[in-house]
Structure formats: C-alpha cells, structure tokens
Length: 162
Image (tube, rainbow, N blue to C red):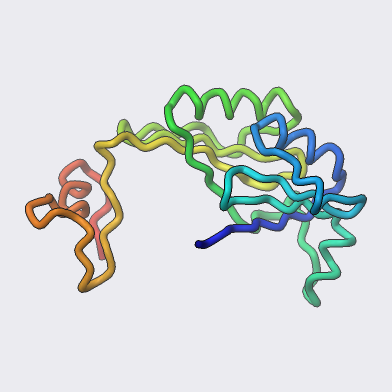
C-alpha cells in the first residue's frame, strides 16, 4: 500500500487547519500539536501542515514560502464537476483564492486554487470517457480489444505523445 504525505510550511497553523477541514480533510489528533497538524483526505492521502520554523527542521535548504513563487501543485480528484465547483467555492469562502481560471476539457474539469498561504491546490474531475494513462511497456491492464488511450486522446485534440 502506498500512502502520500504532502508537507506544507504555513504561516498560521490554526488558519490552515480550519481551511483544509472546511474542504473535507479531517484532523488526525495523534499527529497534531502546536507545530504541526496531520490532515487526512482518505485512507492513503494526508497533508502535514507545519509551522514554517518547524518545517525548516526537516531540511538544510532554505524554506521557500509559497508567496515568493510556486513550489508544487497538488491535485485532488473529485467524483463530479459539481464537487469540483463546491470545492472551488469552499476555497473562496475560507480565505483561499483562485490561482488560474477553471479549465474545461469536456471530459476533464480542473480548478486551480491557492490556500491562504499560497500553496496551489487543484481539484479535478474526469469523466469515464477520459483517456486513461497507458500501462508501462510489457504490461497490458486493458482488455486486448480495447482502444489505445493515447490514440483516442490525440483524436480528441489532446497533445500528441512524444
């Protein structure tokens, strides 16, 4: 089993906890104190929001706060376009902002937002008709008669593979 822990330096730990719980993450009390809070999205995905000075103890590199530039973009899927729009509105209602305007590809819908510290978080929805990523060479997870996802995507106007 793979678990993902995204570690984010923040200026105000309580503000970040309130922001992410409003979006649906839950605080894991066993891993939360005055320096950090563990926020659970599901059984395998967690955000660790860390006071910036505490975050600095995990690296010898300078801590770059998001207001000075983009460090990463974390994308979380949602089950419908409506859920993506609700997440967008929740971000705006809880001190976040829009990073870029929404992008609608028909089979995929993405909103790019920023939390109160400026960390970029995207919410995405893909329809069942969206192209699926290809399996590694030598591995066929699709039915032998299935269409090639890249060919289908190219036919729909998505960028050609390299």
